[in-house]
Image (cartoon, rainbow, N blue to C red):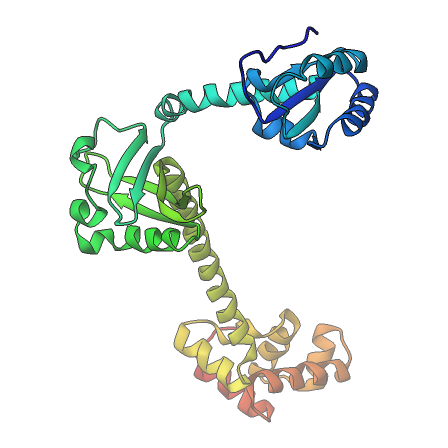
Length: 330
């Protein structure tokens, strides 16, 4: 690279760019031996000094030595800032791209669907970027310079003001709200962030609002479906509890429940118990019942005792009388 001359320019700090690390190290040693000026590396050169008039690009140490000899008649720099040419160029290109982006930011923000308001410390809306819906009953020019309470009223503006106050205190905040005075009501989500000046002091608030109506509708539909399923499950649970309660009642309670609910009392008996009961009601003795059914007398006794337990009675006569009272037919 050719040397950049600083003829006629009085500068106290100078950026020197090298092609390689070795040249940079050698150049640093040379400068320390030739000057009392401060010699800094990389960071400051890349961040602070981008004016081409302050930059010297050298091919190697010999060119730097030649530049030092030719610059004796010029005011000596008070500091030399050393950097690699490749790193500096990347940084310079990035800074140029960032500067271009800053110019385009308003256009980029306005191309999205979000609504972006800037509020000052008095909560007045002082700037807007983004998409303004055509169906909105309010005109943008009528909002700028006003506070939320001037537009929506104190009660409706409370949720906005609470979030803005948090942002003015340096916090992030978010909230949901609805707009109902439009042909189709919309559900909105707003994020509030503090805006700081160069000194780090909160100077205002950035509000970014997005229409989340489709998402809200899907959420409500899911909640509605869950509520319906829950209701169905509760109905099933209620039925199961009724069945469980039936089996947990006392034997007398089972018979009474059967009477009052229109159920056959014999529904609580097994098929064999029903056969034994039928023969008892016809006046058969236990031995005759055993012979008729082809089972042992002891087995007949077990069935009778099981019916005692289920009905709460304690004799064959009471058992026969109980089922006679229910009016059930064998």
